[in-house]
Image 1: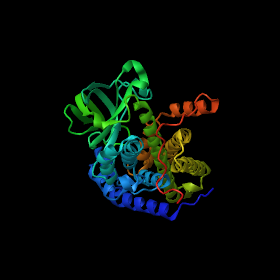
Image 2: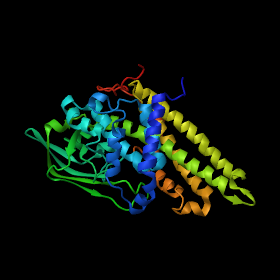
Image 3: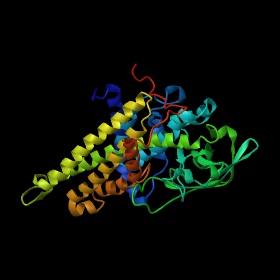
Image 4: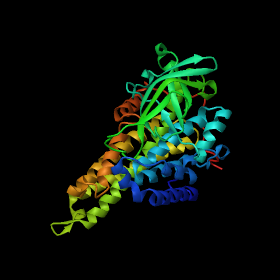
Length: 398
């Protein structure tokens, strides 16, 4: 078991760290206050190759492994959660899903420009009445000749107003439950398809989050991903990828909260000494350290399985649950360490706390992951091999 990052992985970390520090860090507070950032920052990620990190070179990506991708997510969220969200939805939920499930023509039309960053992509599963219960979606698809007609609405969609391509799930037969779900790529500009932005979020304010509406949207059969009825399997495999990115990002937020706290604890004095000398402050710092270390190990375990092309639903679920809980607790403790200053936006920890709160809800709530882990342990949940296994990392082990 090797706990050392390779030279290539370290280079990826440094590249993304420098990018985030240069292109985003100086503007994060302004973006958060305005509750908006432009697409320009995502386009710059594409130009830097970040949006294609784990995509094979033959499809326009860099062909790097999942550990490198995890480190990129970590470094992005260290600066701000909204940056990692772009990687989660564009790469994790959409592009990696197309890599696994799309046919060759679809990979050339959709995956290549997404990996190159010339097209921005997102994922549409959640609805006003369907979140954790994904099989309860009410967006419908009706076959009409060589096309499908989509009607319905999606909610809480990251990059809704910025994306070009949307991996959308609809049901062909509501009575069939999850077996009626089918996946489609909807493209911006299709008649009857509209998007809108949701304002007033507690956290991840700079990131675009919105809704999608389908009013008799005609989607060609060539845009159907997989077979009819495979939508639920496709969605669940996508969510495995998304959860991995969220877990990796949570490690970055924990590190940011810890770094901010140690800096402040050494600078702030009370009772004649730095507050870092007080044992209860040290206790909070120590919790962050332990959480950081365990979270990183869980994420890297999942990444190693992904590198080998081994299904990792259980491991990724545990990493996502634990790392996000740690990030939330670390951000909360960071605010406490900063005292009244932590309650204002003069310091970044209040933004970290707001951002961390969302991660224990999206990509599977804390409660869903607890059920997942318990059911695996009790023998109630047993993974079946997918008919399209997750592709291993390109060049891994060579």
